[in-house]
Length: 165
Image 1 (cartoon, rainbow, N blue to C red):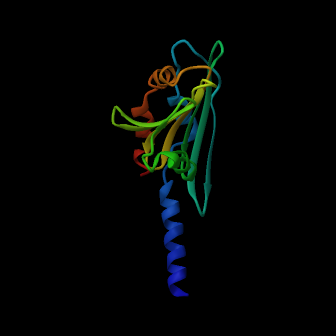
Image 2: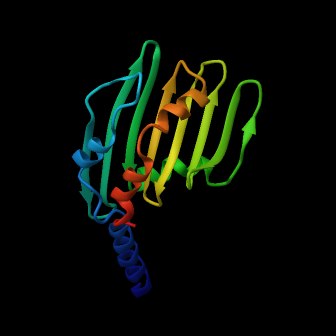
C-alpha cells in the first residue's frame, strides 16, 4: 500500500511539473501574429490549473483569405501530448486519398496530415515536450498551408514554454 501511495504522489508531482510555469494565454495570443494575405480574427484563450494535471494554456486564432481558412492553436499540457501522439511512431503514409508525414523544419518536429480530395488537413509543430502549435486548414494544399504556418514565429512561441520544461 505504501508503494502505491508513493507512486500516486510521484505521479501528481510529475503532472504538476509538466505544466509548471506556462505563460498566460494573453502572452501566447500576442505571439500569434499576422499571416500575410490573411484576415486574422481575435485570438481567444484559456489558462487553467488542476491539481492532477498541472497548469495548461491554450490560445486559438483563425485566419481567412477568400475560401482558404486556417485555424491556429497553441496548447500545452496533456492536450499537447495528445496532438503529437499520431506522429510518435514515425509512421508515414501516402496514397491517392491522404498523406501523413513527419518533417524536420528549422529544428522543429512537424507532423502533417492532408486529405487530398477535401484539400484540408492539419499541421502540428512540436514547440516543446509539453507544447504544440497546431494548424487546421481548409481549401488549400498542405504545402501552401505550411508556407502560411511558417510566417508565424515558431522560435518565439517555443521560448514561451522553454522555462516550463
